Length: 97
Length: 260
Image 1 (spheres, each protein chain N blue to C red):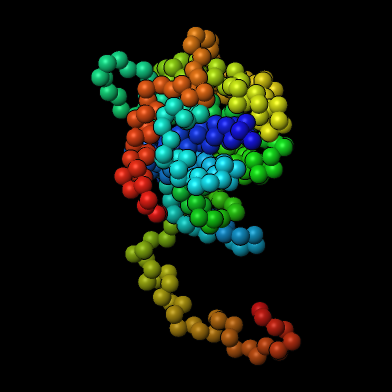
Image 2 (image 1 turned 90 degrees about the vertical axis):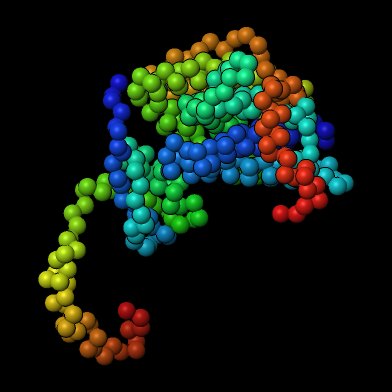
C-alpha cells in the first residue's frame, strides 16, 4: 500500500476543439496522476462538446517566463513593425495565406 | 405490448433511481472534479431514463407522459433493482445516521456499470428498434461510467488502509444485492421471449470476468453472494426508495400541472 498524497499535484489541461486545430490551454486541475487528470479534464472541460482530444501536463514541468522581466523580454519588439510580413504585395491568384 | 412496457420501465427506473442517488453528491463531492464527474454520470442516467419513459409514454398513449411516469408513480410501481435505491452508506440500525460514503457510491456504480456495459451492448440487437437505438446511445455513456468507477475502485481498494477497509465494507454490503440481476422477473422473461429483452444469464460470465479482474487489481476480496435475494424489479423495495422518491417527486406533486 502506498501512503496517501496529502496534496495532489496541479495539471495544466490542453484541449483540441476539432481535428486540424491545435491543442489550446483551457485551465488546470488537481489530480493524483496523469491518467486521473485526463479523466477529470474530460469531465470538467469537455462537458459542452468543447473537444476531440485532451493533453495534460504536470504544471511543475512547465518553465515560465518571469512577469517581472516582461520589460526586457517583450517590449523591445514593439517598434519593429518590419518583422510583420505586411510589406509584400501578394498576387490575387495566391488567395488566402 | 405489456411485456415491452414492463421491461422498458425496469430499465428506465434503474437509470432514474441511480441518477437521483448519484445526484445527492452534487455540491458535496469529495473534490470539485469528482462533484462534476458524478453530476455528469447522473445526467447521462437521467437522459437514458427520459428516452425510455418517452418510449413507454408513446406505447401507452392516452395522457401518459415521461413526467407522469417519473413523478406520479409510488414506490410499489417502480421496477428498479433494490441495489440502486440504497443510500450511500452501509447498513444502520434504529435512528442512526451516516454521512455519504464515497466507497459505497463507487462500488455500486462499478457493479451496475459493469452489468449495463454488457446489457446495452446486447440490447443493440433488440427486436424493438427504438430500444436498440437507446441502447446504442447509452452504451457509450456507460462505458465511461465503468471506466470512471473502475478507476476509483482501484484507487480506493489499493489505496490507504482506510480507503481499502471502506471499499471492502461497501463491497460486502452491496454484493449480495447483485443476486437480483440473475433471477429473471416475469417481465424480463416475457421480454426475452419476445426478442426485446436479453437473458442476463448469457452475460453473467462476462460480468464475472470484469468484476473479478477489477477486484484483483484493487486488492479487494469478492464476497460470496448469498442470502436474501432482493426483488425491487418486481416492485418489492427496501424502506429507502420511499424517501428517495419523496425527495424527487415532491416538487412535481406540489405543482401537478406545472411546466418546466
